[in-house]
Length: 135
Ligand SMILES: [Cu+2]
Image (cartoon, rainbow, N blue to C red; front, side, top):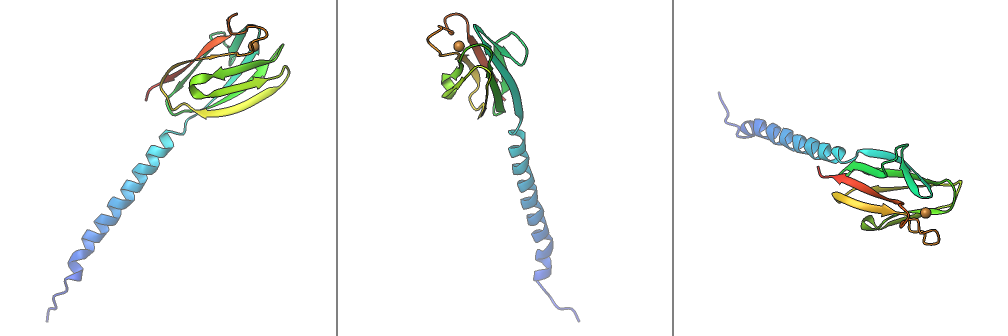
């Protein structure tokens, strides 16, 4: 005696649907992880140059969506790290450190400078560039 049970036929379909949903979740999680790259830079300010992580290039180069952490220090007089396109302006006193983070969400080349006007830092060459390479 054979009984027809339609529920049996739906079994494999349910398994496939669950596997598909699980795969989608994994892909979504993977995309989130890719955007989490952290970049650390030490920026030292001394009249009238910025030194970025020991180099004299006055450049910070990252990839789009990197999480950028900057440790800023002043060696002689008060200076600032001003990055208008990212609405960042941090002032630091000599002998102190200021740490801040931002996500490099906009690709392109953006000027940063020291905005302390007393010593005309910017005019004397305290100008650098944040270079954000598009993904
Ligand atoms: Cu300055």
